[in-house]
Image 1 (cartoon, rainbow, N blue to C red):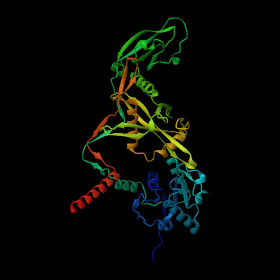
Image 2: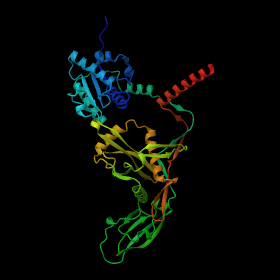
Image 3: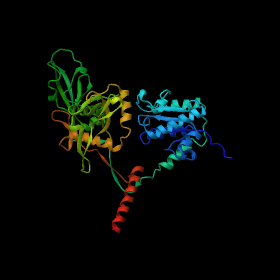
Image 4: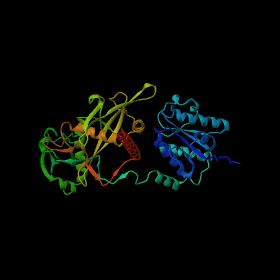
Length: 455
């Protein structure tokens, strides 16, 4: 007589491939906590037989059915079939809280699949918070843990699925960074001291310098610009009375000016921001960094043409949109931040960001809404999406020149190459998907070649 199947599985239902990343993370976290997990992405995890018959797995093995509720799963036939099977099982066996909905994006309540609209959804827009709530629910409902689902099982499964050697090719490869080397930097800086020509108030905080400068004492500042660049800065009763020259190396080492590295970094950052304000729009990030982005219609058709480091001409969109519920349109804007690094060599680390607007011009004020939209918009952006937009933006800033010139004074400046620093890796790597495609391409080529020979 056959024994009935043990009902101990937490079934994770999700849209494939749209919600794969979160589904895999959640399944591994549940297994790590000791819960037996059924997910099409984690076959054989914990040594469990993978049930190809999904209906049988839901009806006979599942103790909790976790439905990852997203805009995609809410209307995809495969996930809705799984959900309908779970609803039927819950009714037939009179289970309570058999179905748990994990809401992963901004799907409006009135668009939720009608059969689960009444349920209290766990908010998984913040993954760790959603996981904590789900674990509390499983604990409260006394879902039994299984000994063969544990951290060791998760580690073993991961090693089997993602071997550290998989995809490694024994040939060198050039790798693009997001580091842009500072070149043509002036070798001298000036420490200018302020002298009063007549009595009068003076507040250094109210001074607006025409070129990058940093106060190093109450009446002296350091800059790359010469004294005449500040002739109209201080009004009629103040002037620059004395100027000292310091070598860049001495300032960097702190031998000439206290906190030399800090001051140099501030000078370069200010110069960067001054230069980009003339080309792009500015937005203050949550961390107070200034992000420079493309507003709508700044460039023709919202895309930028550029050359790749190997000389290929291509283009990338820097402003786009996504249609949401009820016809609402959300516009995205690509932007960059730049941070100077002084040691071991002087360079800028440039990072890409995505910002949002409703009208292609005015960015959202809410940092939380921006972060949430960014996770949704960029979930399918890969390295080439970010890399190419960075290259496109730096090419836009360079214009027809090979370098981006950034002013430090009326006569002083530094440059950045339009291309980032390249590193050479002794080996190359192909992702599993690339390997699979390469194998398929090779197979097709061989078939076509054989047919040609037969002809």
